[in-house]
Image (cartoon, rainbow, N blue to C red; front, top):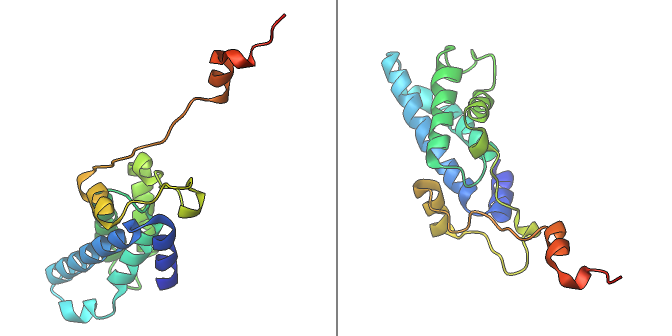
Length: 167
């Protein structure tokens, strides 16, 4: 997953790394809490890194600038419901990361389908948000640019006297 994470970061900015960190911390905390509640050895169950794998897979499938709570909700559902509720590693019928993704896609369709443009498709001079801007977007919802718009070709044609034909 490291090459994929690097390419996502290169194409879409810091958001993928931020998602990965949030998801990993959340997954390890949830896994530790559930295993402790079940009365099992926390260090033994965390040492297989399956929670980290679930977190990374989920984080890589999310939009790069998704709000932090989207990442947390998806990760908690992946670990608690899709993994531990079925008995833990090896007992779950579905990939926990993808179960979390589907829950997020059904629950928050607008946030899950809002992606920034890849760096290669941006107009010249327009750049992706830096690390600090990405952190502000993810944690505070502050987005300095929420869209770029312009007149449609029909509007330009209608209101431009230079395009009118004389009779």
